[in-house]
Length: 276
Image 1: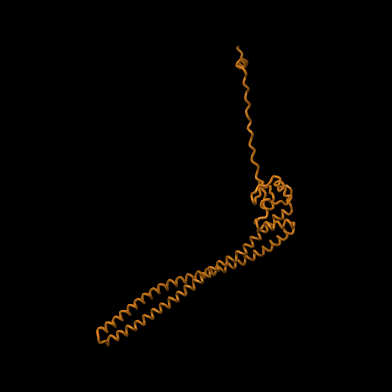
Image 2: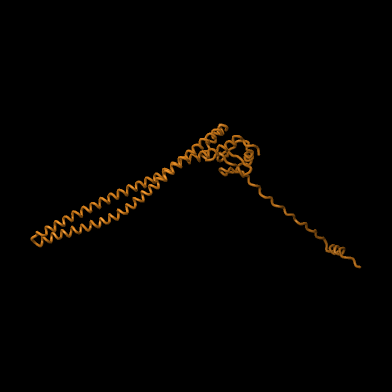
């Protein structure tokens, strides 16, 4: 195989460089998104904390309200009992006794609500402590991610600058028309070069004409695929080995048959041993 065309050699290197540049750009873009995802989770945890705190405040307010109602009802009961001492008729006494019983029932209802509120308060307090612990964990994780992201970004940006310099050097050595075709194909096909192997374009798997394949195998000129427009190159080390040659089996020679039975008898007589 002759030496590869200079532009083709540079294009192969340029494509490798462009791939690495794309990888670095993707990684640089991914790092802030990863931190943002954790920060979004942090916002959710903070919202949960505020929600639990709000529920605890509402629960405390309700509990104080029930306790205030109980105190007020107890005062009414005391008042009713004092009034019962001065009543003149049984009807008045029964009416006051009914008021006392009704107030006592209300007190029992409020006491049950206070017990429910206390159970809910324990649950909200437990949820609050869990959310605060999660917030602490996530906050520490975010700080760690930010530090790692900043360090990785600095490394990637430094490497990116070096690759960009190498890219410009390679591009400056490629013919303008070839470079224009490269820039047009790369974004569309993701790869601008494809290896020709087994008389096929490895990029689109389309068969190549024998004459064109022979030209590609020389690597002496810039040739593109008629189907996908990628630049084609050839690497003899990737050519599949030829099929093994099957050994030819030799046929055994057959003895020619005699024409007449008498001749066979004569031959046997000649071969027989002589009498003593």
